Image (cartoon, rainbow, N blue to C red):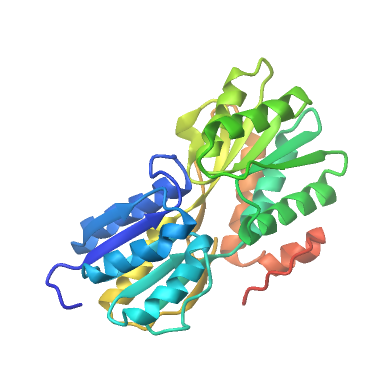
Length: 314
């Protein structure tokens, strides 16, 4: 770093006030500002076609660390990073790191939290109908869905799983519409992996006459509806961004890292007060088995017969 004060920038595909995926990334930016003294900036709602231009603009302005928050930033970073060898580019949720010394990445180990979400949903449902609402059908989400479905099929064979994708990370109305349709069909547990769309799905849960549970993903969604959000499987992106900052400060070369429950990057969120205590204890005990190494992604894949083309080193 040439500057006395290091500079870090964050690019997100959605708004940083979505309460989920993008909010937790911005919290990570604030963390390294406080912890290491970074001067920070961010660009939100970045469209695919604008990614390269924004990355180049930050690099030309002398930013030391530029973070692309999401798998979708991978191609743009691979294109821009060779042009600015003194800038450290970091991708959240991908595996492009290590292809250049100034390119790093942190991949979140999928499957672990998919299994946990499946077990929690299976324990909570009374109607035998679970709904999954995702934003985009990208590989990381598809893989977690495979583990959700496999866990349900293995341990709750009487339970049906409906799947819908809104096609947007930001369309709150689409999330609400998809959730309402599932609720009208008898679904009483919804799992959301949709960023801002989750807010719409939670609104549908709040407005329903029936008792509907929502399980969050990426951020701790409980604050959006403390009574209806049973819990969340939280991705501690601030921890990951802190790792990126330490790599820069220590002048380490970029690498493709993989992080999950055991590494402290995947966590359980706040619990709703009315979740049955035995359900909560059971799910937390399953979560703990990943922390101790009793469970791994591969062992759970074998247990549940989950089908996945994604391979992680363990």
